[in-house]
Length: 46
Image 1 (cartoon, rainbow, N blue to C red):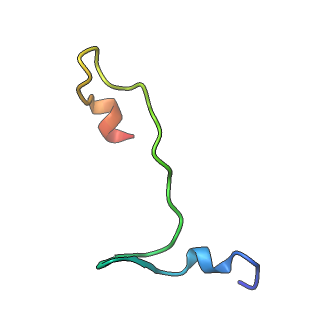
Image 2: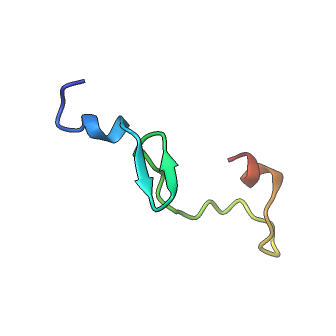
């Protein structure tokens, strides 16, 4: 791949953690928890 962003598909490191690529999903709210704020099966599958 010879684009300006080809490096995002290459492995990367954060400290001792090696990532297979540099594509990540940013933290965000899902509103899938229950009324008490606990995780649900739906949120775990997400």
